[in-house]
Length: 165
Image (cartoon, rainbow, N blue to C red; front, side, top):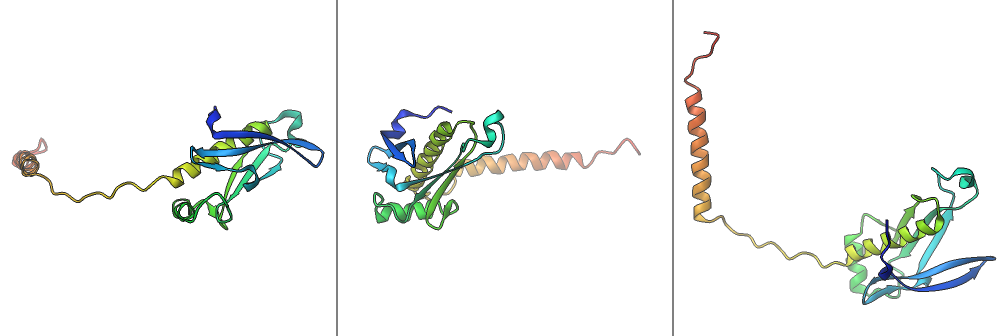
């Protein structure tokens, strides 16, 4: 899966616990960017393919985003996300788990892309309400004519004798 480069707005190197990690801001759309500080990462060992390094590398990625505690989301956006993503929210947090690739970096990219997609879908405005309409006179006539033809066909079939007689 290719990740569009427009998702990631800025790349920052952060040093934590003697390891260098790549920290990125997440661009949802042109007006909304989630800062890297609001994204929480967890890493663990993934099951599945990996060869000799499967038991030594933490390639499974879990990305948490606290919708309720976010400073970049206003009350209207938070309410819309609560409504649209209710089935995905756990204690007000969106949780994305990816363990599809053997590389932690690729799993991180997939997790960020998936979170961005979920947030984009959740922030979409609802579709316009359907206006109730009645079928036109010609459509009603066509439907009744078709019913009549089918009824006549079935009625003609009933008068035949079978081969068993």
